[in-house]
Length: 512
Image 1 (spheres, rainbow, N blue to C red):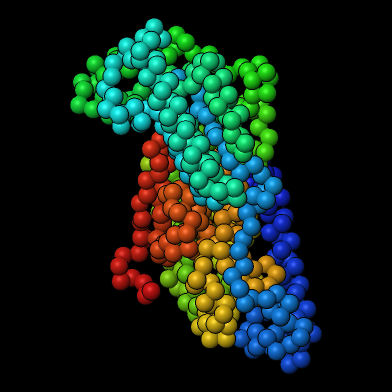
Image 2 (image 1 turned 30 degrees about the horizontal axis):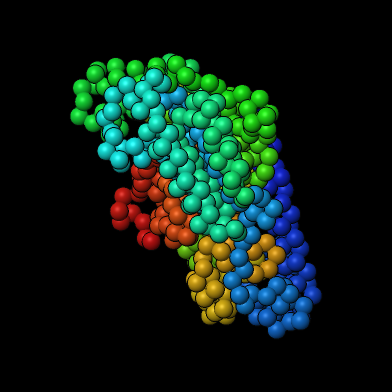
């Protein structure tokens, strides 16, 4: 294993992995205890510990010792998000920095991450508001400090957008966590002092500054090119547009003051991001959401690479529609897919330049995951973690889905009613919301990695990973259609993530 992957995969995620292993181990002990204690259940072989037969489920139903009796299943069990009960629920996040320094890129990343973790987040962009007022295409003089009339207009627009942000924060009610991202330059101490004064009028909102500082010429050149694509320069000659934009930047540079520790009488809270994640400095970032944002921003970057997602190779349990049992028995088609997947990754690797040319394999610890990467691990570094294991069915692991629907209609109906939040009954049982929280360290690792990464897991985990990168609403994640034996190729970029579905079998080669 490469030393580069050890700090995050095997250290930063260790606490979450340990909790998951403890829950899983407790589940296995309960199932073993039940199979030994219940009358009429003589099957206690090791291969049956994690799988529960239909007869065993009936015995659990009838027994006063059964785990299903101990863990009621008659209602949808909702997931409580970690940290939500103790955190400050309203945050106004204020961006700071010169134009084309990556502020909007950081905003997009944060919107995606916060929304995926169950926190409502919305951007309030002063530049977009200006353009909506019909002031797109204004020249550099509009941004010069000696233009008193334009400065008054800019301050008025900023105040209006800020009011909208606070109104949106309040509209969510006291219990709903919300983050409003105020996207503007906010380059002077005077502007920031005004923002701090305004925030003191709010009784339930915390203010955190995020400053993006960039002096890397390659990154700046790339950012300038992207800026010329907005509506301010629509239809303009590129050379003329670039010259005007550079004059606008100079106007801001003339008054720019970096965030200082002495602002707000030394109480200022900020995160400074240098060159889009190469260095991050924090100050007074206390609280659940600010600390999550700070940790996330320490791991972002803009290096080109690929992220490939694929479900495990077809197994016999999958064909037989068995829920959650840990088996590595593959079908003939599944074994063929393992070979084709290895050939595919080798071919795609040659198309990625820079550090993205290197490949890391991430997989769960279940037998079917190991079977799927059997050939890949001979070529690439592989890391297995229980964080990527399948959504656990609790006391119902190992039951045929047809039997589940027939024997426990309340469980079936409860899950169909709220598939995101419904948690399978019994020790170790999970919901999709549980899986989302479980794999957050994996998301951070995928953002951190400069290498290209292949992730092999079950369908539920694949849906959650795909949903993060594509900005899918949480309520829609459990219903995403991700076929087996298909590789989803994700390419992260400054405007979001593009996707490409690549089936490795020609139509008709497999029987679905």
